[in-house]
Image (cartoon, rainbow, N blue to C red; front, top):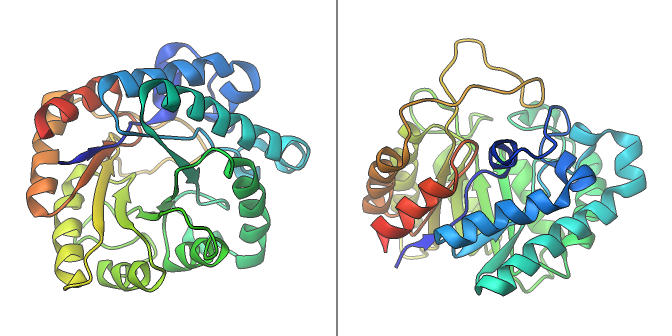
Length: 288
């Protein structure tokens, strides 16, 4: 059976009318309207998701600023965990503790180990009482994943590593590192799953196939949750504005892509930015 993940929290909050803007992104709802976060989690759980991710992606100085993170980062992470846990318990599903790329999305050049460690320490502490698995997501480089693996080495919960890919050409991490290198690192760290997220649907099938081939007999689960961003010659910085959502990814078309990922070896499928509860409902109905 394919595990069904949830969809993109930020755009779902925006659709629901929650407080939402850049640079705070999805963290603004935690600050000004946490009931909307609950509503979004409920929508994905009712749609058929087996796993919902905490709304902790934007609880970083990159989005909310250094002062607010220092003052309220731990409490906000705890709130994000509690909101997800409450919904998960009502629906009998699991919670993934979301650990984002803490120094900037799509920016492997900004990664610095000790600066990232300080931020991740706060997020992990806040989410620890609520997470069933750890999901380090939208990782652009092997270094980001290696740090998370080191910090959670003594934690008994499953670790999922999810990498974002370059959207053009042959699938590779945004750092330029290979799919095969990501597989080797995931196996070295004892990860329970290797996923690919926040990238175009078109690059995912190749990534899954190459990951499956590279695993050999030491196979772990593979997952995909693509985004719905429109292609653009001028890419909007990750917290510099709101990117357009493409019009050709309605739920039936997204399900068509997902079938290809599953055929290539994926065992988990969900959605990232712009993929909502209707898409997840289509996946749940079409892949189970």
